[in-house]
Amino acid sequence: MRELEMLKEALRLQQPQAWVVAALKVLAKPGVSYVGKSTNGVPASHLVRVYSIRLEGARQRPHAPTGVEPLLHALQSLSGNVKVTIESFDSGDKPLVAAFWAADRLLGCIVADDIDNNMPNRA
Image 1 (cartoon, helix red, strand yellow):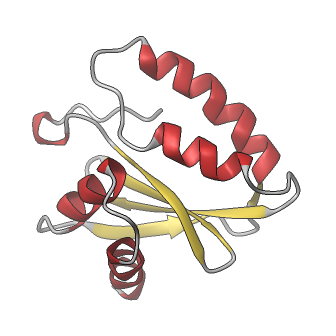
Image 2 (cartoon, rainbow, N blue to C red):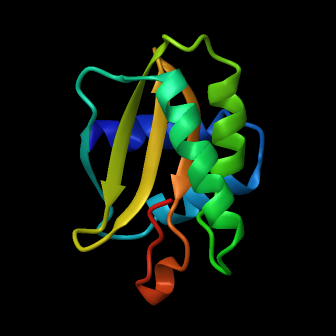
Image 3 (cartoon, rainbow, N blue to C red):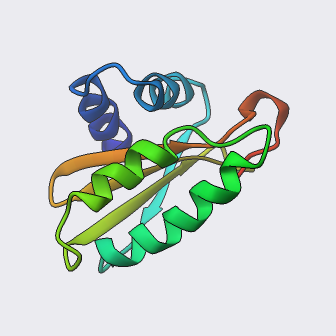
């Protein structure tokens, strides 16, 4: 529960962007819980490659997850060897929010699309 509250607080400190609003909305739903995080972190350069590809794919779908493009911009601003930790939050049956951190700084979140229709998109 501590991680959920920490993420909500970090989101409240962000500028009101679509990914921030979407993440706060989802995290306020009942039953959302912390799943876990990447233990050693992932190099920012690797995530830039992965999410560049996923962003292109997401643009071709009608329901893309919120936050991919702003996250990609944040990752591109980091040195390639910076380790990024990814925390996952879900409702037990589907992923809802992935939060990306460098040290103690929230870089961004990817919020699953179409949450109310049970069709999350993992891009």
